[in-house]
Image: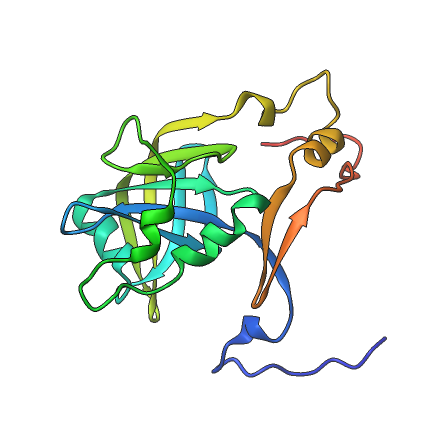
Amino acid sequence: MSELVELNLDGELWDHVFTVAPIVMIGTREPDGSFDFAPKHRVVELTPTHFGFVCRDSHATYRNAVRERAFTVSWPTPHHIVQVSAAAVPHCADGEKKSMRAMHTVPASEVDGVLLDGCPLYVECELERVVEDLGTDHLVVGRIVSARAQREALRNPEVTDSELVHEHPILGYLHPSQFVEIEKSFGFPFSRGFKRD
């Protein structure tokens, strides 16, 4: 067995090793009425009807979602990586995020918001609650009021799951510094009698 190294819990624990996470674009409305996207990887499908993301209250995304009581979620593909990167730039001195001018968007259907065009999956959420006692971070929890997906991205009994992933690669984030294009997958070896409850 290789040597185990004790990690400092006071620093950035997750910066010492690579961990894989989805990467999404959280869409919110700014105070001036414009829309903003922010890439997030600390996200979670809490329940079939609830989605959450972690954010600090110093970030515009957090303030916008709480003020407007709504946010959108777009799952970008690997070909969106430049747009995802551009969405991470800070606002300019005049308050505008100039990179948003280059984003192709489509309107949300149930909340006041926009979605990043060309993504395989979208959800729209109304703010349900914020869990604030997580140190400097907060968990923003939304109730899903709309979910849409590209037909070709849906699982289909006529196409194996691994073929679907190969034909429609998934963008992932390898925290803290890499992204990955997932195009190869394998069936999980569930034990006999396994049931999803």
